[in-house]
Picture (cartoon, one colour):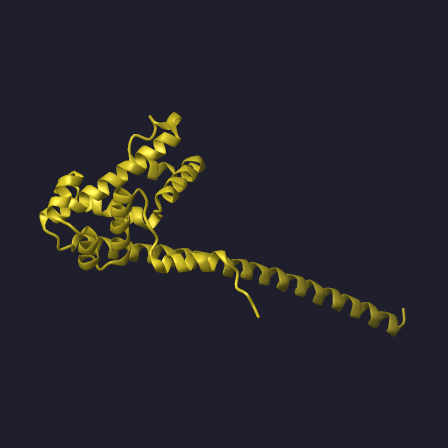
Length: 214
């Protein structure tokens, strides 16, 4: 075996070693990349959870800080409870076979998380009434916070005490999500469906109409 052949064999072996090292490095980079993606997903999920928790804390603070009189609070509670009952009743109308398994609105909210059929029906009911999940969160929070000390007033009694409930809510409730939820609750009870605000209508139109380039 001459020197050239020996050198060629040594070169091939060296190239194989280099190739093996490159493959090992590639595998390490893939593992690091996977770990990075995994950490990024966990961070994003944690950020969403934290943001959601902050939003919930702000909502609870706003609900507990409402400066209504007991009568005003009861009138708002009346709208809230009527909407929640209305939603539950409508869900049961669409899911008669599950009536026993969904005795309360809370059971609907709990089971829709894992049950796609219930979730689809729930979303369709919200759409019927012009409501959003954020509205339900606000209304349920209000109900939990004030339901034990408020009374239910029928429509005629409500009108005797307060002529313009919309003005009262707009003037007294500064938390936007809570204000929106209460206003929509009033609209559902008085008009049968919540009406989108002008800003929401513009946003919806922008989503429906594609941008036109000159």
